[in-house]
Length: 113
Image (cartoon, rainbow, N blue to C red; front, side):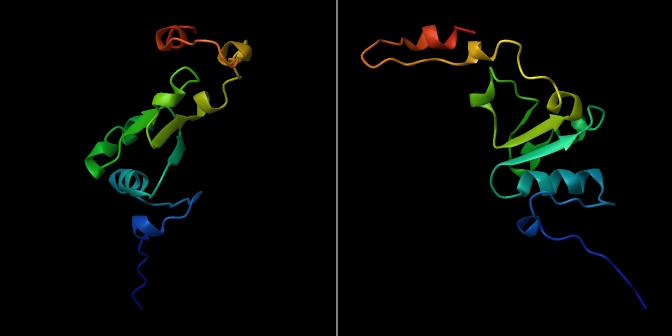
């Protein structure tokens, strides 16, 4: 009996899926081609494996911070160390209270951190 195991196409990969035995290029392709936003958690040693998502038509961001959160791409690679970092010491510095009728120049808002 010939028993072969095939991996599902990228369109059928479920969120939270774990696929053992896949080569690096196959993992990269599945991640890049998964529909919609996706987050991949990996070690810092293996993060470089996911540098070339653009080859499969997706741009990615690695370890976004609160400061650059709005510029992140649809695919996000988080290293384990970054994922478990403590929240910023002063999270209130990332909060902004907007008051009706006040002026908020764009450049001032962009440089406030």
